[in-house]
Length: 217
Image 1 (cartoon, rainbow, N blue to C red):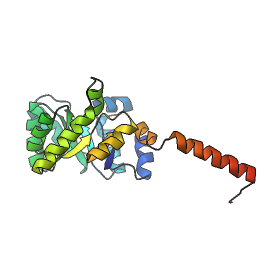
Image 2 (image 1 turned 120 degrees about the vertical axis):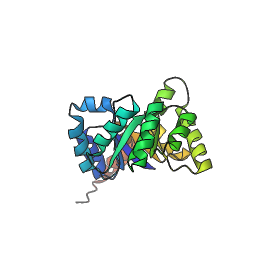
Image 3 (image 1 turned 45 degrees about the vertical axis):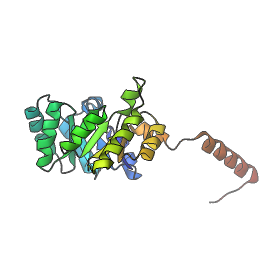
């Protein structure tokens, strides 16, 4: 499973990238706002830092304007993935941009039917939002399973990009369900390394090493 990091924080991306934990990056208007930087400037810097796909989201609501914005965003770098919403206009924009040879990430997916439409429109990635479904007392992981089954049934090449990841458990569960990609905030990726038994065992080893006077260098 590929790891995308969901942030526009350059320092956080750089740290994870140096560890080989970044296969791509996803951004959205909220993350760009949080960075406090110009969308073109920060997106260009991310694209120079990361080899994989970098999702940059349109803000238009009509297909015509989404296509224009998508083309403009794609000029930033070759690894730009144009991010469009899963609306009827977004699907129209996806179809045009995909046929032009551009990578397209269709976002804000909350149903298997929506995911099926995105695949038919030629999406490179479909982004089902797990955490936001969980917020409504629905199991967001069920959606990942449903989309995976449908895509496998018919050989769709659209990659399942699990989004709105809230916990380290979401990451492992998505991996078991066959998601192609998970995009998560940096803190969630860091949390994947944590386990109380690891901490307990390490404390015991350190204590024993100190009592035994063990030195390596």
